[in-house]
Amino acid sequence: MKYGNQYYQRFFQNKMKVCLYNSFGNIENEYFDKTIWCPLSKDIVHIVQYFRKSGGGTINFSIESVFRQFMINETGEDVSFFKTDKIVTVHKNRLVAFYSQSDTLAHNTLCIISGSPDYRFINYIPTHNAENSDIFFTKENIPFVQYSFRHLKNVKPDILVMYNDWTKAAIRIISHCHLLSIPVVCIQESIIDFGDSFKKMQHADNVMIQGPKSATELPRKHFYLTGNPRYFHSRHKKKSREYVLINCNFTYNIYEEIRTKWLDDITSALDELGINYLISQHPRDNGDLSKYKNQIKSSSSTLKQQLEKAGLVITRFSSIIHESLIDGIPVIYYNPHNEQMQYDFDFNSEFLLLVRDRIKLKESLCGLYKKDISGENLKLYLNTHCLPVETESVANINYLLTGNTFDTTNFSFSDIVHLVLFQPVFVSSFQWLKHFLSRSSESKD
Image 1 (cartoon, rainbow, N blue to C red):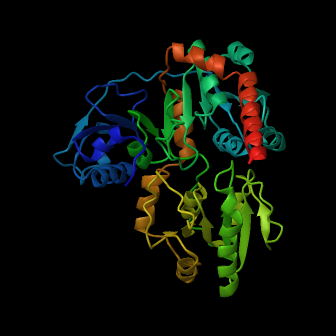
Image 2 (cartoon, rainbow, N blue to C red; image 1 turned 180 degrees about the horizontal axis):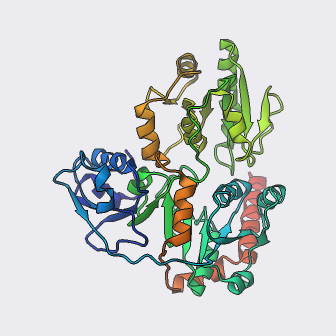
């Protein structure tokens, strides 16, 4: 099992002290290595089971007493119950600002605000390169404004929510919020390889994560375990299962050179077996797929419709893996290009298979296509990786956004650096220079 930060391999070497709680705020105590807010449900049992299994018996638990009713048969020497006397503050007329950097992330915002929250909200989109977030909000008849510090200062929301805290634009907005003492919440909206140079989900003041798996892989001390706003409990619905859905998502110059070979392997194998397929092309995948039959442009809002008729999904690294499993659809991660993953998917032969060559792919298709994968193992997997099974993610998120007191960070020297270096004009100039030098180098070759 791989981890993005070697420090957090302590989970498997020393006695980690984990606190699971449900009160508002953060249980601040230097005694704990990790504090995790969890929904009030019997999911707490699965969460404890996951940490025990992951840590190999090297984890000491403190669990808030509100969970006692679910833990009667799970208590042990490494579990201690405690009661907090926190005073709950009612936040009347709270204003939440959502920053949606693309149409995919705008869809997350739509899911959240569609949950009839008890707070007011405004929607920000990037001033430059909105990646169709403006088109999405316009289509859904949702008001939005282009982000600016002046507007942020004038309205001064109580919380700013984003889904990507590691781009230069997002980091600069976080610095704006630090200057105005506005807490920033980053919601995990997908599978993420933590621990790289981008320091993903380490810039925001607070983070909401999909599942306990993220808590072991992300080098932070405090988490809110809410689930992903796009994930819903629809996996037991009857499906027509008419085709294999191929997820083509070679975006942002990541493995774009092997796109055609990857698709050829899959489509030829399916054709030989006489299995229908539909190629779903990511909105930021710019490849020419005209030579393939049954291909369609996708988006986060249309993906559910495509999954409704799928009997199997084939993909590379993507959030569609979890979205498919939630809908009861088995998945093949096709990886002939040996893509290195820091995230541990817990591949298995039951419903999530890792395949590295065309021969094995063809063999696996027969066994997984239209397979019924419902069962306790799938439920435990989902609870571990992507959502609290017994509660709705949107409800968890809105509950916290309505009443919780979030941490904020004081304005610092690093914020000054971010405000200067990450100005849009500087970022654009740097990107232009990088592109110019790259073209110059190619012409010399």
